[in-house]
Length: 168
Image 1 (cartoon, rainbow, N blue to C red):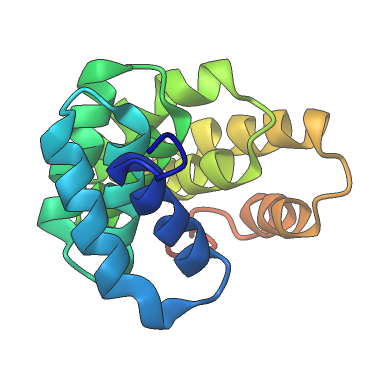
Image 2: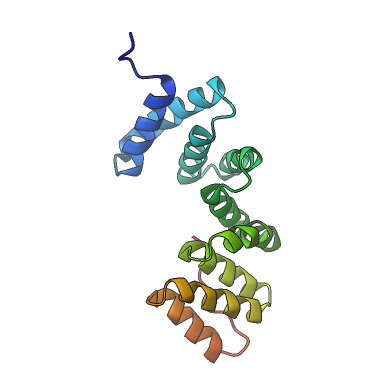
């Protein structure tokens, strides 16, 4: 009947359940999202949700594949870019993360998580000036962001060392 939810709706419903704290439903959500993606491989929303669920489940290589597929479908997808970059940075592929994050940050200069991650990785790559510029840019849009203010102060006062925070 018309009232029955589609597999896609059901999968996204379970995803919403898990993301709002019902972690017991994680496996069911993964199963439903995998099915929904098979039904429509071009559906960015289900692919992105699947990528996030896979990342939470520590299946980083599968999550990475889903984020890459989302970015093939929509190169401007911010969440996929941030999350894929985070996985790359955590795997030690710092320049690959920067290459992914820089264009995303150019379009989303107010995004604290993206900018903070980018600033951290730029600093780790020895590009302190780039890191400082990014932190100052974030503060234009978020002047009261304490974490960013602290990172900026720390970077300005510590000479060559980076205030190391793991990309999130």
